[in-house]
Length: 485
Ligand code: ADP
Ligand code: GLC
Image 1: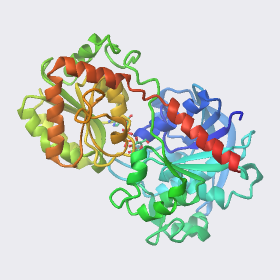
Image 2: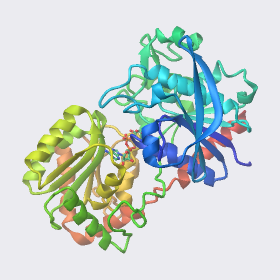
Image 3: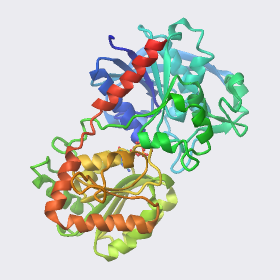
Image 4: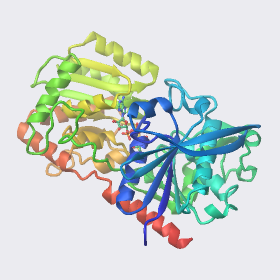
């Protein structure tokens, strides 16, 4: 089959705007699909500040889309950018998207997130309609684009340009479902017929994630283990029964990493290295210790974490054990932002032990790269983790991770306790401070045995985390949908 015309709709995509792994996926998977011969366009909101900071040139497309919403007409000029083989279309609407925070102020959510993202969804559908070549696949991601499969199947179905378009919906994180009061339905012109318990109704409210799950032609999530976990009460976040009804169209496809994550070529790190040429990694550790004002010591393990500071990430487990680790003389560096309470606790701990612990509050990608490169051991004690990209980055940079055995962490890290000959990291199962402590202590003990450590590190670096295999799986899924149409 010749290449498909694929449109991605996502609320963030690297390198233009990023708060987490969704952006990594929405930036890199399209490029991998393009390498397989497909045409891919990514449509996203035009967030002026992060887009300007990315330094990717953006030009006006010379096309505007008009949408009536909430009793008024809004006109959205479209803009265009090209990154490698991928075309981006950016939807301008400054009062919606030019704010400090993609989804809300620190630790919160914008009150008008439903109209903000519904507007984006409608403009994206109109942009897809107006494309020269009919769109074969509309691939939507998380709740911010959950209403698109519903709109495609209802209000947009009669448009001949979209009649053959099939929708794919990917759950990146079921914990955020986009739930809003039902009063918006009439105001925003949402399809009333779908508002019932088999559709997008959830305890009397609108649930955007449910809308996507119910209406899409194919449903995916970002690891096989998470695909099973979301069918259980613990991780289903109230949708496990509903998801079970749709399990026949659900598959788990693990995320990959794009090529920019490569310590042999990364310009953001102070020295480059590769398996067999590891001197640069020691220089990265020394440089990170200096940059963070930690004691310059080679023989002290430097534990690092790069994370959104949210419940999901097990920050409480870290905070519980960190004082004991500092007591043992280890070093700890945390880069992250999120819940103000956790930020404050990390800052306090770091202040008291500034030569041993550093907390950098904020979102800073070049610094994240120096953390992955300069750390000895990466910490990721997530309570749940749909896929996780940070552990893949840590492995690629030769910093074996300590992870909890959940979701994509269980699928991508081979634990030293399970196999001494194929391990790429360390893991624990119960989400308790004791279990986390035991796994980190094991990692530090093995770190002190250089020959064993070198082998784990080399295997971690050589792990194939490229997008190739997973992009092929998405392509097969798309081709199956198109063939069935
Ligand atoms: P999630 O999407 O749940 O946050 P992932 O592990 O899938 O988790 O992806 C996180 C991505 O965000 C990675 O690319 C990671 O490097 C990046 N990241 C997280 N926090 C920060 C931060 N404070 N500064 C820079 N990058 C960060
Ligand atoms: C979500 C998940 C994370 C996943 C990312 C990309 O943010 O929390 O586990 O890697 O999406 O799919």
